[in-house]
Amino acid sequence: MQHLNYCRSLLKHLTTTRYVNEESLKPFKNICIDLAKTSQKFILPDGGRFYDDPDLKALDEKELLHLPFPRIAIEFTRSEKYLASLPPEMRTKGYQPDRSLMFAEEFDEHITVTVIVWSMSDKRWLPYPQIGIPRINYLDRDRQGKIDGRVGIKVIPPDSDMVQVRDYDIEVGALLNLLNVLSCNNVHTEKSLPKKTSMAMNAGKKNAVPFDAYHYLVIDTPKKSESSGVGGSHASPREHLRRGHIRRLADGRRIWVNATVVSAGSGGVVAKDYVMRGAHGTNA
Image (cartoon, rainbow, N blue to C red; front, side, top):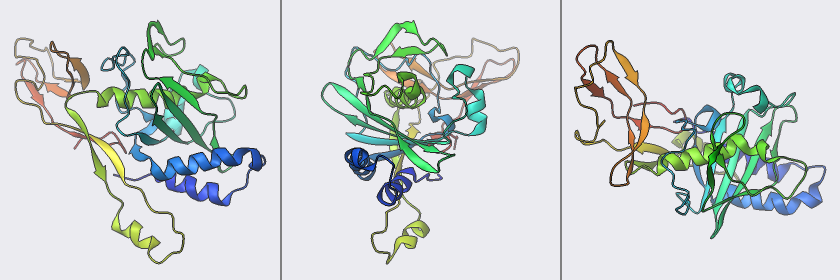
């Protein structure tokens, strides 16, 4: 797994860079520094979604929304290829960050979200005003997103008129998609530690910023009876790939069903168990 080290970059940047509005921004900078030091880190693939479920089927907005840890940091890239795939309404003319870093912190009634993006033109991290997501009734399933047909996500707006709620769409969507997959009973997290070569670079350096460990998602190996829920009765005219997806079982559990190759003519299903690694969303 390739570690992005955006939190590490942010820490170095905030402690060495002076902003134009430094005095008024200083309390918020201190909050960001604290979050970068104390949050559990996750890496997501380009664009922030390794599994794009527009309906967020594994989440039940009538139940309290939980983070996997009290504070988490989510890091992901925004490549030119990804940005080109967005609907025109979601592209910001003249400005698009190529790195996204967000923090989420769980409180009794809401989750506070802090978004910080890397400005390619200014070569600096730019923090957005904080927003919130209610922990109950946070989805509006009667309203699909006006732009991309996704289920509505209720957001407590920022205390600022300089940004709009739509400016947080990509990061909020990445967070809810992560929690959506983590709601599956057969998905858990494991940790990827910094490489020894990276740690050696800091050896003996005064006030060196440490390299981070990252969490990634792992799909547990399913039992044969639960691997796909599909028998041999559905013969396929030709071989095709059935994409991985989330399924709700009759007992209320949500599980991730691995991608499967359906054999030509036989109706047989060959399932491949894989580790979903946050850095690339790849199979192993």
